[in-house]
Image (cartoon, rainbow, N blue to C red; front, side, top):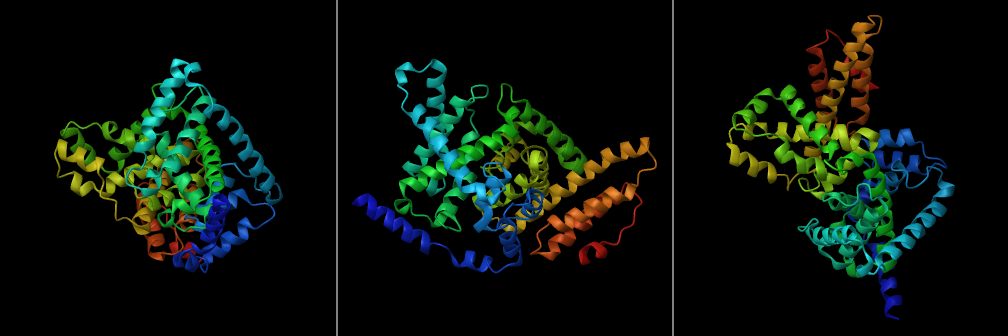
Length: 412
């Protein structure tokens, strides 16, 4: 009877939790465009990625993430059966690993389990949601299951952080909550929690497959990203780069965590979720190359303060970035700046090709970059859109003598 009553309370909870902010969001143009896109019999994946770059309405975020990551098919008629099959598949091998007698485990398996059990309580300790025992149990099961099924990389510290935005988004969607801060875990049914656990497992797996070399021995992917970040800072902020060298600071010493945990510990959850909308839309580059640009944008944003600090002050500052009060505006500017640098670096590579083939039009790829900036920058804030275009135009005009009427693209 208590179980039936709890499920009844959960149903009522789902029906009443949608916030006024989420209701207002439903009236926006972007919301209606997303609704039209995801309601189609077959979702246009390219169109979904394109629209997701500038942010996904909370109501459709979980579905969009799951389709983009390949967890759910774009064909709506196959979605329900696929979801049921994948969840049942996870439940079967998760149950198997959870019932293993610890005395029969290998030494390596016991060490993995100890590491997971040590890391999960330290996951997002400032968030009430992730201090909940039931949530921690879900994270422990899905991380240990992943490690057992992927012995090549097994479990590495930092993977627990990557589960945070996925679990929060899927739990909020399952409960019709615009934000997980509104959730009361006593009202969430065991079935709903198990479904969120399964969904998180599969989507985390899809992300880890894309960045697997971040977690293999010696973590070559992380090393590559740190090297790219150092080179990028030398290009976009040579004064900051020189100051770091004068203070004897190697960027990789403090940005390792930024790469390993993808800024999960540096940004508020709502900002992180918005950043992940863009990362997912960038396909293979999002959690790798584009993330490097976002990290560079973070350093650039605080460049003025950092250039006045000594060694110890810099380390303390970057380990405790003052982002707790950030909102959409700060995130949009980071993403816009990251996009500008991504586009301008691609143009440098294009120039090398043009030198080999003078017949190629120098302006065509620049026009494409401008057009994408217009289409992908948030349509809500036109000032941000203009700023993104103007910055991109300035960055590329320093190298190319090209003239473009920005107003043509704005009107488009």
